[in-house]
Every structure is written in structure tokens, then in C-alpha cells.
Length: 265
Figure 1: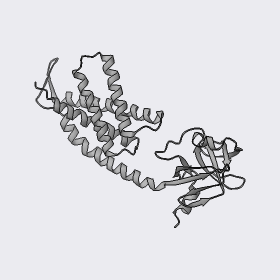
Figure 2 (figure 1 turned 90 degrees about the vertical axis):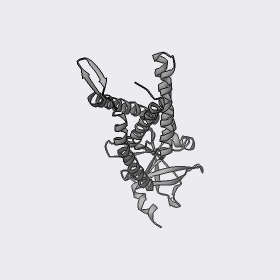
Figure 3 (figure 1 turned 180 degrees about the vertical axis):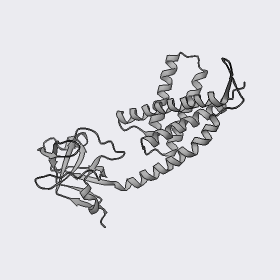
């Protein structure tokens, strides 16, 4: 049986393309199409390792490095958790797709006489590509449109601190954030402590009670004001959270009560 390296390389690149597309869809990443293509081209290089006289352990680590590079090229680096999540799902998708193709090939591409299997003359790999590609590309385009519409909830936000410093961040208008100070009814916006730590070293913290999925006390600080798309909000508290904000492209979770005011002309 003849083996054409260019065909194998093409199939490998295209499967990597489908895998990265799947990761982007499942995790709703804002991955540009050209970055997915570049990532899949990087993944296609792994097929060349089969022609090297190296140990299985070395091969494993080389493939791991290629997978990490695929993820970094496609989704860039934000933090370790973000990258690991992408990498783990890439491997899970690869196992699922690989297992499905193995089963389909055994069922349809191979026949057996007793314990002997032989190829009946065609492979379903190309057929699988032709069927799944339009579906995944359609879902990718739809997902990107949804993400684009979702970007209408992103606002350039400047925070002006009592120390006379200010920082420019990207805020996300979250309909789920209706937190207010129960004492003076001040709206609360949420930000990761590490984003603003150097500006609030000497600021006095306020403990504000909150109710929601859980109850507790939220550490907040007073600020001079925040500016959102040229709209100024003075009666606002800055809520400090320990975790990072895992909303793509967002540094701050804005208060839902600000949305109508931000949309006013």
C-alpha cells in the first residue's frame, strides 16, 4: 500500500484545525481564524516526528511542546489556568475524535476474515473531514457573531483613586452584578485585588455585607469616581476580589445599574 506524505500531512493539519476549532467553540474563545490556521500548521509538524529515530518518551515530550505551541499561537497567553484549560480540552477533543475515527474506520473501512483485518480500498477520514468541517465552521462563525454582539457589554473604564492615581481598564457590564452598599446605596463594581494593589496600599477597607449564591462580607474601598465612556460615576465603591476575573477581555465587572446611563447619548 502506497503512503503519500503530503496527504497524511494535509489530513493531520486539517484534524488539528478541527480540534482547535472545537476548543474555541466549547470554551467560547475569541480566536481569530488566521490564528487557528497558524496553530493547526504548527500541529501538522508533529507528523514529521514519525520519521525520526527517537524514543517514545522523547516523542511524547516533543508532541506536548507542539500542543502547547498550538494553544499559545491560537489563543495567546493570559494566565496559567487559562492556558491549561485550553490544553486539556485540546487533548480531550483529540482523544474523542481519534476514538471516533478509529471506530468508524474499523466498522466501514476494514473487513475481517476471522482475526485478519484488511482495508477494503477506502478510508473514511476524508469523508469525516468533508462532513464535520462545514458544521464546525458554521458553528464557529455563529459563535464569533455571538461574541461580537457580546462585546457591546464591554466599556473602557477609568478608575480615579483617592491617592490621585488612575488606571485604565476594560469593564464588562454584568446583568448579574446588582451589588449595592446597604447603608448608602452606593453601586459596587468588582475588580481583582492584584489589578489595583499598588494604588490602594494605604486605603482604608470597608466590609460590605452581600447576599447571593453565598452570603458574606466584601472588602471594598472608596474611590473618587470612575469614568465609563465619558460618563462619570461618583457614588461608587470598588469591591476587591481575591480571584482573577475569568471573562475574556475584561478587567472589571461593572454594576448592572450603570448600563442604562452608559447607553444614554
